[in-house]
Image 1 (cartoon, one colour):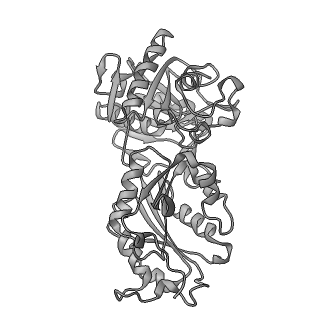
Image 2 (tube, one colour):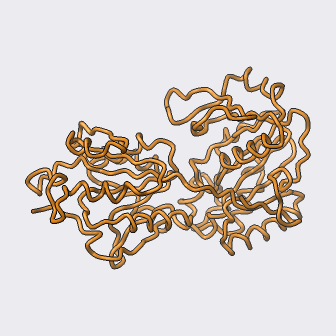
Image 3 (cartoon, rainbow, N blue to C red):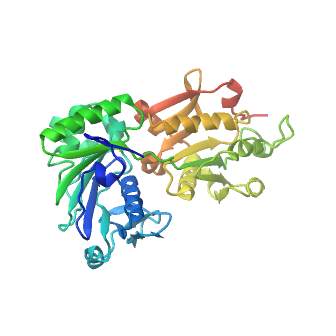
Length: 408
């Protein structure tokens, strides 16, 4: 984690944002581009300093892996409609948290994991007793298509609408009384995230800091970068109608069934989750270390397998979808795709041959809702056509890697 403000490099988030925390401090975090990452990094920082910290939300947040750690409690309610999410606790519980902790950190906004957002009329939900409101913004959005990186971009006022995110839009989204400063309680701070090692983002952070300083807004910038949680989803539920038999069990020249090739390529990957979606018991039995999901309705098309895989993958940051009839695909190529995604320059990364998109593809979690709404055999083509500016192609080393086998 790298942290900076106008004084130079800083050691802690509290120092970077120039905060003097009162007794029983309440901090509400709004905006987009790393709210949850900031909250959990801050909680660990404060707990290491001997503080008793509570994390909660006034809206929704993704379900944490652990609900309690040394010095940190997470106080939320289950979301009956979204098992992967949690929601605000009852009002009387929320209001009483400040008396039970040295610091209460509140996720007070939602953004579907996009770098920037424009709030809806009911957002954010910042309690009146908040001491500090911190707006987070992701600088990875600069230069990207506005509709791809700004949550609720279609609700932007006419004066702010533009094709791509520039400095003026970034500044307005963060500092406007209708944007990042909407509903502020207590002192206001800005944290510009996702600077990483990008020189253009660093230059933008310096420039924005100067603008905010003139406005009397204190800001910090840096990178809360953590290794993204990538789930690999193997789609192995097709009927092999053109092949004439279950092609996944067809014995290849190397003596292995076709499905074994992709299983062996995925096994060495250090990823968050490995999911296999299939309709075949024989295929399921070959992947004991995978999370196996049986697809009882393969007739609904590839979208059914994708959605079963997404549900099984849970709270991942990105999803790599692999078909299982590319026996030439290697672990090294899959690693290259993952490394390309980790650079954060695109929300969709696809293998390619001679500039043409092929499988596999990695989709950021910000496309999860669109993926879950697909139907039939379209796969992700609709999403790819809509978000052409957010796609990075990674060339395969050999044509054999991208070749799928449909017929004997």
